[in-house]
Structures are given as structure tokens and as C-alpha cells.
Image (cartoon, rainbow, N blue to C red; front, side, top):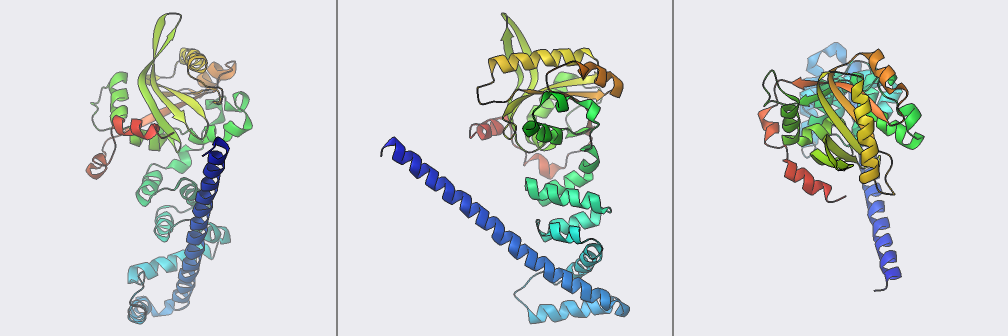
Length: 337
């Protein structure tokens, strides 16, 4: 097969695969919308018959199970969820419209745990965009990702150092504070112990940092003028098409950290960055920080840098520990890109 024919073949296969993915998504969205419309209708009927109390829902559940034995979802508990769904969506058509983007179980989780419509809309849209599983969504709500993504714009200099195409995504990956599930650390841990603990359970770190991160290495060595320097954590972000340098500090933010990060970014851009890559981005994660100190430290730096604090949770559920991949697993994952 000639090279031109091979290119045409590859392009055709890619187009077909993309079309299949689009179609599958549309089929799911249409089916999900019809299901949610049905649940909205049932919820509306239960509200109209609320004068009968729980007896109506109990009898309705029994009747629907007998009439539609091959259909699931008509338990008393789920019909009560339909009632809740109707009560929420009848007051806000926007919530009802976007709810069709995600599965029923995810909607009910959001309606149960989140009380404000603006916040509900954010979690629904993030779930749809990032493909969050039920338990991933539960974690995001538990750790209040909605509030943490509203990062003070003075804690980074992305607006003046990144083009529009990168700026939005870069701001989305910033959280304050970041929350890491690390259980192997003693109370008075060192930075290296924190780093090694993060590497051991790198998937959890990636989930916290956001969609698109691939792990490159820890204590990544770069050589400048015959002298070796070691970056705490180095990632590559697939959507941003750039390297992300992360420095971990078990102290309060100090202005000199910004200068050191600027040096690392220059070195990574000169040594690692390819022609198709965008300029590297730096994240400095500290135990805490003073907003004004960060603002002054970043004001005259022309490299994109963000500063955030981090917190460590005390307990990681045992059922999650077994599921988290090792550093080797993540390296295999990165080879695909």
C-alpha cells in the first residue's frame, strides 16, 4: 500500500470511529432525555397526589412493577427520587435541560448533596465534560470542588502569560486548596516523604489535578551548565500540549519559590519542549500562602506560574487503595500518547 493510500485509509478509519462515538453519545443523550422526561412526569403526578401521603407512592410502585415487570426503576425509593427531581426542575428549567447530559444516578446524587442551583449546574456540566463516574462525582462534592475552583486570580499570572487557547484550561486545573488522599504519612512529614507518597498513589493525584495529566517523573533531573537540578514532579498535560512543573513545599509560600520555578520552566522549555509543544506551566503547592506575597512575587515574572495551598485527608478508603495503580501502571498509560 502506497503512503498516500495508507494516509487515506487511516484518515477514513479515524472519521468512522469519530462518527461512531458521536452517534453513541447522541443515542445515550436521547434515551437519557426520554427517561428523565418520564421520571419528571411521574414526579409531577406524585406531587399532585401528595394529599394521599406515602400510600399513593407505595401503591404506584406496586402497580408499575406488576404492569412493567421487565423495567427497573419503579421502587418506592426511586419514585420518591422522581418526586424530588420534579420539585427541583419545575423551579429551574435550565437544571432540567442539562440534567439529560448525565445518568439518573448522578443527577440524584447531585440533588441530594447540593442545594443551590448554580452549584448543581456546575457539577452536572463538569460530570458531562469529564466523564466522572458516580464515585468520582461523590468525591468532588465531598471535597467541595465547586468552591475550590473559584481561585483568586491574583494567585496566578496566567492572564498575562498565556494565550486565550491555553488560559481557560490552565485556570480550570487550578484549585485552592488541592486535596490529596495520603495515608502513609506521619504527622510531621518531610517534603520528600510527601512526594514519594504522592507518587505511590499517583492516580489520586492526577484526579485531583484534573483531566488530561500524564505523569512523567518525580525528582526529574535536568542539567544546566553541567549542574544537575531536580524537579519535584513533572507532568505533561495532553489538552494544554505542554509540560507542567510542580514544586511541593511543606512550608508557607516564600517569594524566592517563584524565581526558582521560573528557572525550571526556562530549562524545561529549552531542554524538553518540542516544536509542537506550548510553553511549560508551573504550579507551586505550599502548606499555606499570603495572597499579597504571591501577587508581588508573580507580578514581573513572564513565565506562567500558579500558587496554591494543599491539604491532606486523614483516611483513604481501603476499597480505593487496591484500585489505585502504581507508578509503573501510569508510565504504561503515558506511552499511549
